[in-house]
Structure formats: C-alpha cells, structure tokens
Image 1 (tube, rainbow, N blue to C red):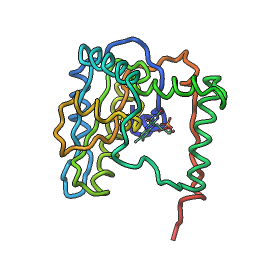
Image 2: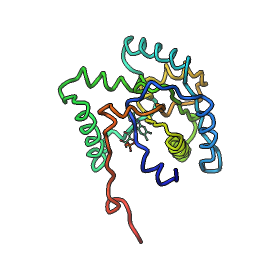
Image 3: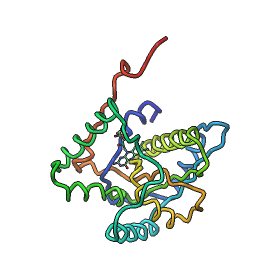
Image 4: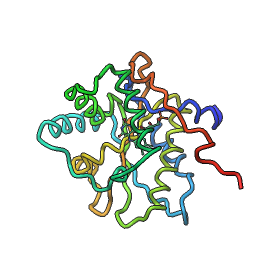
Length: 220
Ligand SMILES: Cc1cc2nc3c(=O)[nH]c(=O)nc-3n(C[C@H](O)[C@H](O)[C@H](O)COP(=O)(O)O)c2cc1C
C-alpha cells in the first residue's frame, strides 16, 4: 500500500470485530511512527498500549466509572467556546450524518448518551493506545503529537487494521491516568481505538466530507 492509498482508505471506525490485535505489531508500528518529525526533534509523545488482559481490566474499570457519577472536568478545551462557522457547521454535519446512520433521533437523549459512552468502550475495539504530553509543552509540541498519531494511523491502515482517535477520553482522564500510571506532569491528549472494522455496522458507513481547496488554499 502506498501513502496515497493509506490516506484515502483511512477513516474513523466506530465498530470493531472481536478479533485480537498483537501487542508486538502495535509496538512495531509505534516504533515506525516515531520517525514522524517534531520541532527540534523533541518527540514530545508518551504512548501507553492497552490490549489483551489489560483491556479486559480497563473495560471493567470504565464500566464502574461510568455508573459512578459525572465525567471529569477536561484539562484542556476540546474546541473554542465560540468556534463559529464554517467549523461549527462541519461539526454539526458529521454528528447529523453519524446519528442518522445510527437511527438515533435528536430528542432521544438516552440513546445519544449511550452512544457517547461507546467512546469509553473504545467502540468495542480489542486494542487501544493513550497519548500523553508533558503539561509544560506548548502548542507546537501538541501539533507534533498530531503528526505522530496520523503517521501511526496510516501504518495501522497499511497493516490491515482500523482506528478511531478519541479526544473524548479527556472527559475520563483521571481513570486513564490512574490506569496508565503516568506521572502528574503528563496530560492526557487522546485515546485511540484499534482493531478490524466491523463492515456490517451502520456507523462504519459514515463517509466524511472535506472542504474544497477554494475554502482554505491560496496560491500567491
Ligand atoms: C484528535 C482527534 C480526536 C478525535 N476524537 C474523537 C472522539 O472522541 N470520538 C469520535 O467518535 N471521533 C473522534 N475523532 C474522529 C473525528 O470525528 C474524525 O476524524 C472526523 O470526523 C473526520 O472523519 P474521518 O476520520 O472518518 O476522516 C477524533 C479525531 C481526531 C483527529
């Protein structure tokens, strides 16, 4: 698979087959992904793999956590308070399309919450990673995380598996931090579900759009 094909094929998958993923494969792909560039070559990421028995333990912990009360206050703002258009319209479109495929209506709060909570089951994925960054790092280092994660997602695609990056985990960062045993100096950025896509699940029919280059590209 060449890079263009991997980019074209990658999409967020939100339902997975019950098929194990080898931890050694994830280690290999993460090591390859570490060839990603980073400003000053600081490589500011810290990754934890959750797989196999650790995933079973973590799932049980999360089930208890979800029932025990409200989510954690996020440590970073996922989006600006007033994000404005065209960004808000794009967010809305992806949500409408996704809930449409799931046949969950706007007013069906219980089903919406249940689907949101599927994030905290990694959408049924057998394996996952968490990505932390040191608290004192700046915006450029956060962008380095993005490059690392996209490189990793493309390598996972090449290996015949699928992913969904998940900032939703910032709403349960305390449980994640406790489980991964990272020190307080590190802040959770996101999780990522990893496994083989369930081709029969409606949510995986979601195909997101991209703005045309007219909207964001200038040739000077
Ligand atoms: C950093 C990051 C965090 C994301 N967090 C979530 C999440 O918490 N839950 C979710 O369902 N999708 C999440 N997504 C997936 C985006 O919604 C998705 O990438 C976007 O809609 C474009 O669709 P595509 O990935 O299928 O191309 C996240 C993506 C990125 C890059």
